[in-house]
Image (cartoon, rainbow, N blue to C red; front, side):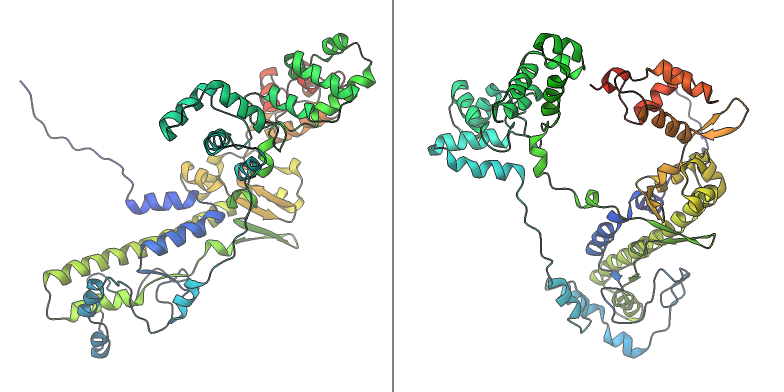
Length: 495
């Protein structure tokens, strides 16, 4: 028999506004402008003061957050009869019926600004470049479509990622073209002669071989082709002694062979890659200035847009409250207006809170790493984890993590990711704690100064760090070496 009982539980849930704030915190400055523009397009009750400067700012980011011209705590704001007559909800509804939901401000300057177009740079991508070369082949319409299918199957690096049998199926089901493996292979061989050299292959080995075969013939090139064809695995593992013995050449000749191979392009299609707007350059979120020993922190102005709630939408609400006739259609319209007004105010509050959280967190980081910001010396960086900043700011660790992610600060010593300033602590033999970044710097210096003919093993690197007073395990050295993108000793060996 089932027993029913009542229980009280305390659950913690994020409100929609808190979720919106968390998402905004994660956005870097480079993407914030697009996010604001998206909100402006979705919500007509939200305006950008910089774009529409047709009156005083009623609800902006420099405000204390209160809206003296809007309803507060259920108290209606007095409105003159002139204003009530000027903005009639019936007029708004008639505009809606006509398919025009915009409010007439009597100024066409904003519309003119919207019509302005920004010139776009025209660039040729990799696939277009290869397709343009199809005209050099004497192909009928059917073969041309097959060749287009092959080129369309190339990835951005220039490699063919589809098997020939799969290409046959794609053509049969997608374009109703019957073909054979032999016919496709014949076209692939022709496309492999296109520029850039090394495209339309399945493996790195074939890519490098194609490039070598397109080079002027010489003894080093012939030897390089033999290395790529017969000793590719030994080459990538840097078993140079074995390769040199098989080729029966001296050190100087072998260096020439290696020099030719390392100059080849493993990703021939990547030279046509177009950088993403957000990846092509860095927009700092913060600026730190050293004013005679006093650090000054400022937030990038792009993080502080002049947003406001539309005065026209607020006047519509006031006109409805003063009106006598309140039918169903008007109530539905007012509900829509109120939702848009609330959404606009929430978004503005979220932007304000984002600014405050960013500045508060960055100020704590700057205070914690003051010596670095004053000197620019990486050795001055103190061990710092997310919890340290969370305690200083009284924020949650997850909030600090969101702020530190994808954010940059510009200093007189360069532009740094905020994550750059976070590192764990390592205890020295004398009990002093140092940043793991300092250990990585020393490890990098040791590896940089090593004899590349006989590079240090991880065990040797560990012993050298212990001699310098850093009590560290070999597996930790291997972890730091991997974080520095430094390969193992065998792969660091050079001739």
